[in-house]
Length: 320
Image 1 (tube, rainbow, N blue to C red):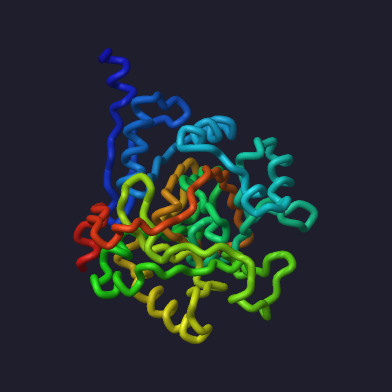
Image 2: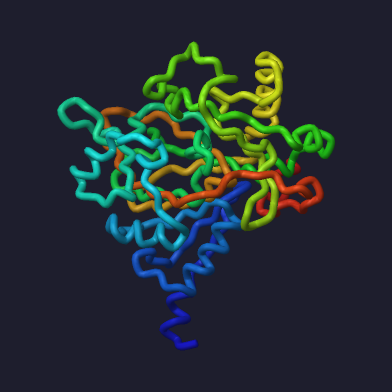
């Protein structure tokens, strides 16, 4: 190996003091080579989330990077409707694979998606048959006060599963949850939906509670979204009781990492293996993030799921 090549692939990996995540230092994603990406992808699978600061990619370079992770897909295609971020794409001259997550408005109307309010716990696009795999955000503009909001908390779903007692895992095996497509992560109604919709009959895919990762082979707890969720085969009140207990077991601080955004931050996560939420932030500030994602798979529980080993990243965090 030449000295020049060695320098390109030599970057620092600093695991975060949390149940997931690592910071990558000394890497320019706009110039990443094949050897560096191979190593980066392995780290992504193990750490579930990667933080790379001080990045200045163009939108087309972001799309090129997304293509290394898989097949990019626009959020409009995932939602199967034309979203208003198309206005932002025109405003910022962006390719269709890039979604603008922003609170900016033009003529009093949102130009992007998700505004400045709180976003509740969710995995992205869990209301589709094939939720996305890699999901990534590049911070173009964020509020200057890191303590004033604009935080995102991520939860390791491998850890949430691994921490469960064996008898409870057996109780979960074979169960599926319908992810009703009624409200979004800001708890706003989907077009044409009503809060009076019967969740048992409402449209939406069903995903296994125990989900086996197609690449790592380890199991994770597939929570998706709490609202408009239903455990198939149960009476509605029984389902609600079951879900309350499941979420209480699965959503714990010891499984989490909170990211405080700064301009130039690039964060990529394995959407198959975590859920996340966002704090509300000051609506008078500007926040612009470019998002991209790649196609995922239809979640499944492997026949031998209960005998598979732990994923391993969370380590002692699951035993606290």
